[in-house]
Image 1 (tube, rainbow, N blue to C red):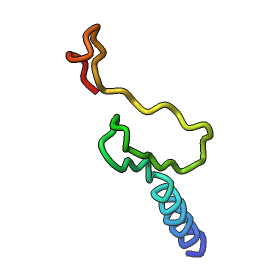
Image 2: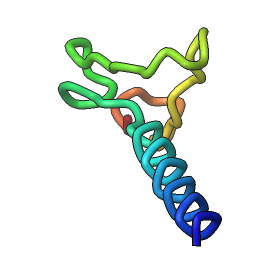
Image 3: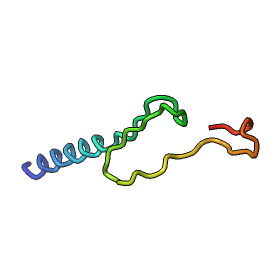
Length: 65
């Protein structure tokens, strides 16, 4: 009984710690705009480069952020 209770409490504690660390980057503003800021959790310094989802063309007017 005591072992089962400790296992349940350990599982709950590890799940709580996992979910607390899942909070990822928060972006204020539109990503790619000059006024956008990103808040990181600071566990990895320097922070990894953000994923780029745009398309780079030879003509700037045809490129997308």
